[in-house]
Image 1 (tube, rainbow, N blue to C red):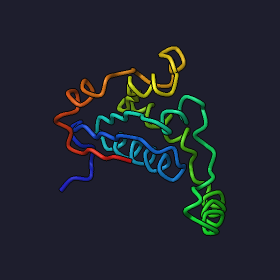
Image 2: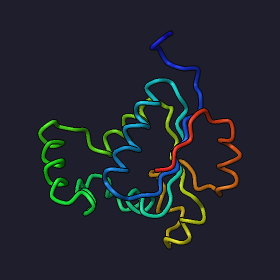
Image 3: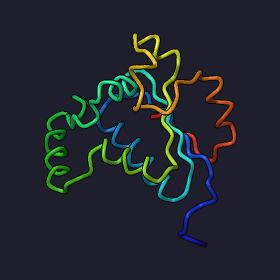
Length: 143
C-alpha cells in the first residue's frame, strides 16, 4: 500500500457551519486531501459562506457548547501555534487542487452578490450543478 498521492479523486465538503471548530475542520481536511493529490471541492452555505465573505475565518472563539473547556482549547491551540483557517485554505489553494464554491441560492439569501465574492470563491454555482459535477466523488462530507 502506497502513502503517495492519490490519482486525483474528488473530495467534496459541504460547508454549512460558521463555528470555528467546524471551519478549522473544513480547512484541515481540504489541505490534507489536496496534499494527497485529491481534487477538493468545497461548497459554502449559510454561516460558512458569511464567514468567508466577511473575511472572518480566524476568529478562534469556539461555540458556547464547549463551555469553559472552549477557552482552554483555544489556549492550547495558540500555544501549539496551530495554523489559522485562512493559512490552511491558502496552502490548499497553492496546491492547485482546491476549488471553493458559493451556493447561488445562499448568495441571494445572505444578500450577497457575485462581486462580493470575487477573489474569495472560484465560482457561484447552483446546487444541482454542483451535485452533477461532483456525483462521482470518492468522499463527501457535510460540516
